[in-house]
Length: 123
Image: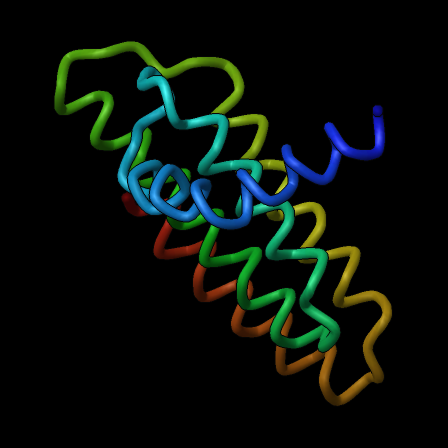
């Protein structure tokens, strides 16, 4: 019975969850589907098998967190504690991923990270 229930839940997520995931992509931290958005981001990172691509995606996510904070401020809303924590987590993961690269790739990727962080700091 548990196996059947699990299969039904998985099938529902696969076939009906796509709409929910799509709808969640524009949600801000104070909106109902934000947890779905961050969950799909986390799952997507698990499928990155290239360190450079993973680092790039992590920095895209960091930029997204910055944009969310700016939008919240512009809307007159407070910034939930989870947003800067996720931003920090993305940056930390990007740096840890760089540590697994060869010297040439690591140096190039760290330069790109520095540039992105400088832009984010200006925002």
